Length: 217
Ligand SMILES: C[S@@+](CC[C@H](N)C(=O)[O-])C[C@H]1O[C@@H](n2cnc3c(N)ncnc32)[C@H](O)[C@@H]1O
Image (tube, rainbow, N blue to C red; front, side, top):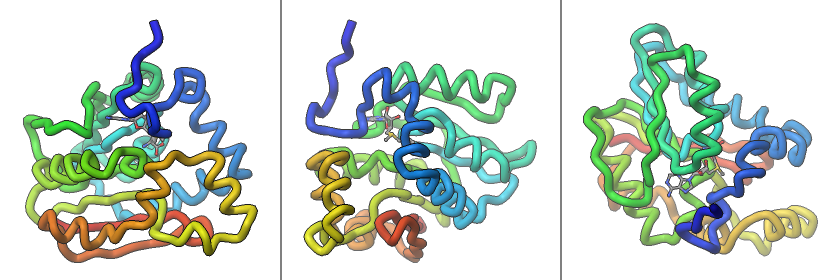
């Protein structure tokens, strides 16, 4: 039976087909630039072997596997997602890794896990929510971070769509949803500051259209 989408206008609730082929489609469509940028962004997070990481909207687990390569026996990653297709890929990828776990959990509703983390990561998910729900995602992240912990948002940067070269704008408009157009227009450091975060640092990739924003609790 076809699953109802929570936000019909969102681009981050992927079809079963797209979920199954997500990593390959992005690699091919970006001619390899997207996965290379993800590798650089995860390097820039400077993950430490014992980090306790929560991955919001973890998808196939591709990013999780990059983060996991920095961990030793004491670090862990817990991924949250709502997609059955993504769950299957994530769980089979890490079937022999007991420190990498998955939970079916909506991240746009308040939730309470039984532990706190020192890193919370969200990659290419938050732009796809209506703005009111993004506040809930940030509040969930804040509540689940230890004091001094870092919230990393890897997503579109803030930019003026009308100032993009024509061919970039055409691609962005063709593949992205209305929530993404709204996301790039907002001041994310200000929004995070209003929720209690400080010490912002940022790294840019893909001609500065993609940003890793770090905010500390
Ligand atoms: C564009 S994909 C990004 C996946 C992964 N973070 C990455 O960067 O490769 C968006 C992911 O968010 C998940 N997602 C969408 N809405 C969600 C929600 N309300 N709660 C939890 N996960 C959600 C989707 O199932 C999908 O796996």
